[in-house]
Length: 334
Image 1 (tube, rainbow, N blue to C red):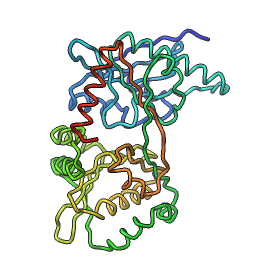
Image 2 (spheres, helix red, strand yellow; image 1 turned 60 degrees about the vertical axis):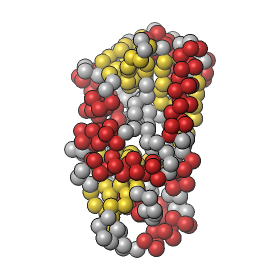
Image 3 (spheres, helix red, strand yellow; image 1 turned 30 degrees about the vertical axis):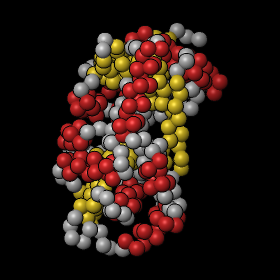
Image 4 (spheres, one colour; image 1 turned 180 degrees about the horizontal axis):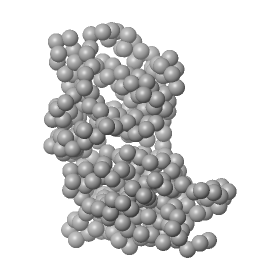
């Protein structure tokens, strides 16, 4: 087995970042320098790339937000992103057994470095990495995470997978709604908060953070802001989607109370738009909260599994994280 090494590269080194991104299996808009730089400014954390390489060939890259809390260095997952770790391409792919061993070895080197640099670590794996044994061997917690992905084959095939109740809602809606682009991020932010309040939940991010994020990204081509109005011009629901090449992500959503079926009509429109633009999948960005699962399930997507990972250096930090997580869940009524 060749010797592997892990290099820590700050986000400010944009030339190295762009070169590394071209070596990834799939270049994601969420890993782009401009996107990450915006997250760093809005959420006020630093971002480092941890790159495990064999010689000059990168094997795995982790994009890690970093911060200090009470003298403890913390590595977090990317907010509002499907993952923060990606595998790199190989020019001559090895046999399956050798590839598995190579990735396991690279993950061990990555974990050793993260454990050396931080007191607390959180990672989110992409769906193509389902082998979590290395993390379990290192006594990390492995937490399942789910999302629905709609396969965009054809309009008829997509509609055929909708639930009967959804098809009835869409049919009954007729032409009584108007869908338009939204130019003011503060409207999205207010509707985002209203949607959580409607379900009796506290949003994971404040409306001010959502507004600043959208203001920074609204000229970014992959980001689209949409809203749906009733016959009187009242805005009932909003959606922000991110067009990441073959996948469209249902990134931010909001709706007023009693707005059904406006949100259903808006998502149906966005799925059709993604299909027209040549996308292959529409990703709902999570299906883990009971109060929103039924809505997303109705669109006939495939339930996709990925894993989140957590580690703390000692029992005291583990207790603090679990206590904070418990308080957060109670505050958000999850």
